[in-house]
Amino acid sequence: MPLDQQDVDTWKYDEAGKPIPEMDKEMSFVDHLEELRWHVMRALIAMAVCGIVLFLFNDWYFRYVLFGPLHEDFPSYRVFCAISDWLGTGDALCFSPPNVLVQATEFGEQFITAVKMAFVGGFVLSFPYVFYEIWSFIRPGLYPAEQAATRWVIAICSFLFFLGVAFGFFVVAPFGTNFLMGFEVGGAVNQPKMASVIGYMVMFTLPAALIFELPVLVHFLAKFGLVTAESMRQYRRHSVIGILILSALLTPPDVVTQILIALPLYTLYEISIFVAKRAQREYEAALE
Image (cartoon, rainbow, N blue to C red; front, side):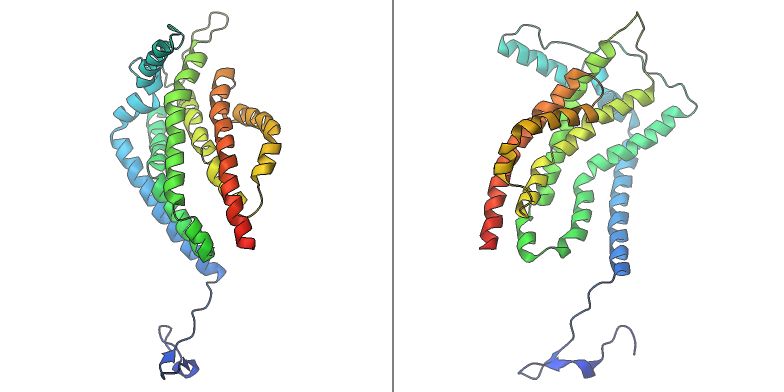
């Protein structure tokens, strides 16, 4: 019998005499791997397309994005100064980055770095679609109630991701750049390599993007009864220590940048308590 045909002798019939074909069998492990492969391939294609666009405009990409906080015309410096004037603190927040000469000391370093960062930037730009492909693979395994409860998960996760990237780029990066590049010991001159500067810019932004996904993580944990709002309130003091440790691991070794990461992370922790409280009600209602 051909593979695209079914054995009609095994069909059952309803009251009207219409045949009822057998239900499709569950996908095997190999079928799941094949399905996952196509989701991953589509996500990689989206990242590659966005990366190629960034590579074609690499002069703009490096000048205004990757090296943006190194220039005085970076918008955050004007915003910080305006905030300082509005608060009446004078020039407390008015600062500009030191004059930094970025060096490329290895053969082909600029080309290789441009290709790598085009791929990283492609991931950031295509994150909503990449997450959509991942979620499309996970979603069929959820119960209908769970699928309904996570209807807006792609939009929410994408919004929090870009919010974290913006916070790291416009807030953490200028402060971190000013502190690290302006710190001098023994009269040494800061002339960092391109790979070093790019590495720190990535550390300023991507960890913040992941940290901003905390409310979503707490929501899912609370939905399954693994986390409660009461337990999060009970261990609030312990969380402060954990937040400081996490900030130290995710950021360069300077106090200013660690505090800039720790403050929004603690704010997200407090927001997550309210998220957990709401999800906990839904979990308890499902048990009744």
